[in-house]
Length: 251
Ligand SMILES: [Zn+2]
Image 1 (cartoon, rainbow, N blue to C red):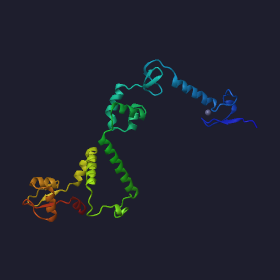
Image 2: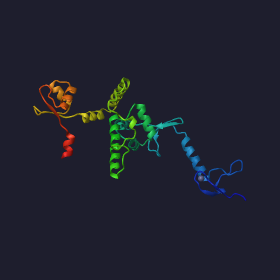
Image 3: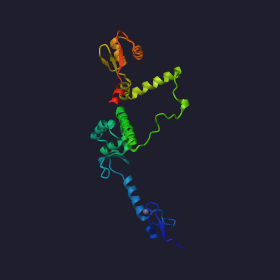
Image 4: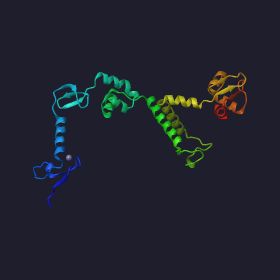
């Protein structure tokens, strides 16, 4: 039986053998006539020699700089200004739409000019994503892997009276310092959340933290905190913690 039809692997159509060019060996070519022609046309467009200079490319809408057979995108002053101004606080997908270049070209140009994303903007973005994930979990009732009262790995848990080795202490402090440097805004927020507001019973004054209260009375902060826990006066005055959390839940 003589073969009369063949599938073109490029376009996937099943065609008669007359729709395929015959090669030198007498066999039909792999691709069909349409695909072969389109491929030739594309190759010609890709490698066509264009006179040197900067001119508009109608297919991409960008100014192209031609030099011999080499070509590259010509970055106009407007584009560079946009890149410098918008890149640090804009998503790459949006930048691609604004400039009309590919994402790879955009990032390469930014690195060439030494432009990077704003650290704080990036951190805020990730925190927004985390919060959105938490919200959706709450809406759909998806339980997070961390639940109260469940012990996944009791042997590695923090135990009372456990002491870190000196090297581990140094390592931990270094890591915390590094994190603070990387995320200044988050570090500030963490400090605020760790602060305990204090009330002076004798004068009726309130302080945002133990350290501020201790400074105003010229005593050391750790002493003040232990005296508050004992319920004893220090420097002739008695202090109290203001438990914001409790008062909020009671209301
Ligand atoms: Zn084809």
